[in-house]
Image 1 (cartoon, rainbow, N blue to C red):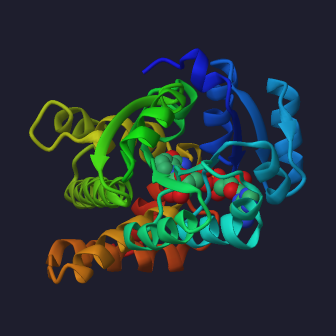
Image 2 (tube, rainbow, N blue to C red):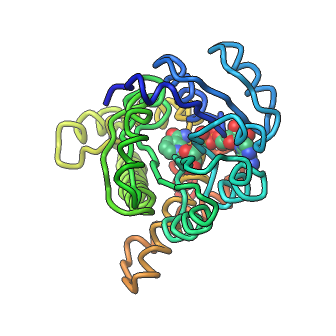
Length: 299
Ligand code: NAD
């Protein structure tokens, strides 16, 4: 959806300018939105603000004083909650303001945060994204929008439309649930492809040839098409731009959701366990594509 003149008259506060947040804020700036940005790393906030010509808030409270819509793109839901409540954003926002959590957060905790914000006259919607850094840069993200107030969803949709395509997913928390489930499917596809490469190579198959054949066969998936050659076989793992610990968090979120719904789902729990172990073994800074390295060590 294109931005409308009405949505452009709101000041948008953007919190979290990392791998995803920076290009997303850039897309909002390019669409003509009035922006104020904040990150705990003031250096990256200042560099981005200089590049796109917007204001920097020295702390979250100041951002809340200026903005009527606040977007969070932070590592997880706990950090979102702490920035919004303890950081002073909620207290500073005017009545009728909206917080859009675009991070991959936990759906049940999102509902709780929504209730707390509603008591202060602020509406929370969840709008996590898929497509990675590549689609954030081209403003072609898939955006999963959940929320309880149709009027608010209509108000934020044109803003979100500057960063990608908006899919309404249902009530508050539904975007976060769908995002976690999507990443389970994505993580399982990547791990399966890496296991197949390792077994095939041990048998004497050529990995490049394997990827070519997988991509013309029924084993094809997003990872075989977009991750195996550019990041795994090339060993340029970290250029993929999605941290291993964030993927482990997302698969864990999907497993916790299944538990909360009393659904055993063995594949999901195995995947959650695998990604958690890989994340612990490879440590902070590892990219999710390094799941190959973790599996390869088992040769
Ligand atoms: P990142 O670690 O690159 O960026 C997070 C940013 O938040 C950093 O700049 C950090 O300094 C900042 N930050 C942390 N705590 C803060 C706080 N309290 N206040 C202000 N700023 C704070 O992470 P990312 O890859 O951009 O991911 C952000 C979110 O998007 C995560 O929830 C992730 O799961 C999700 N996501 C990532 C990708 C991807 O490909 N990288 C794709 C889809 C969704």
